[in-house]
Length: 170
Image (cartoon, rainbow, N blue to C red; front, top):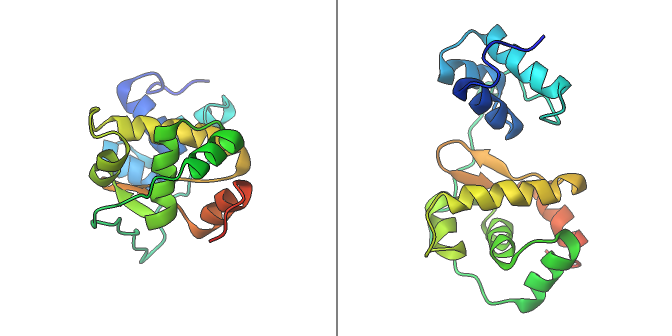
């Protein structure tokens, strides 16, 4: 049985954020709904195949989120890197540049990624690129994590996987 909030703005937002790894407790507090309701929405999305994994119940006690870089990101032009990303993952040049930023800095703010990847476009394009990259890298178990309200990060394991798949060294 579908949850009453599924298909609403709140329900769709909860599913999208759960897919990005935001814990259920954080979703419950953010949208001011009972934990059981948030859990039901996410569980139904998992059963429907909309999301792949159930997120954590809540942030670990005492956890600190990674802080994204605030230093300007400068990328060297690397046609070989762009070609490797296209061959390995089917990434566009802009998606490859965003991935290159995350490989280099590991955690980046949206404004910094926007300045490097597509300064002529609307800032929301960064979120669109991340969504597309996640879809293309999901089958390789590569994760791009959301740093809530700030930007994106790539963990060491995902970084190693990407570099190995495109034949680069750390």
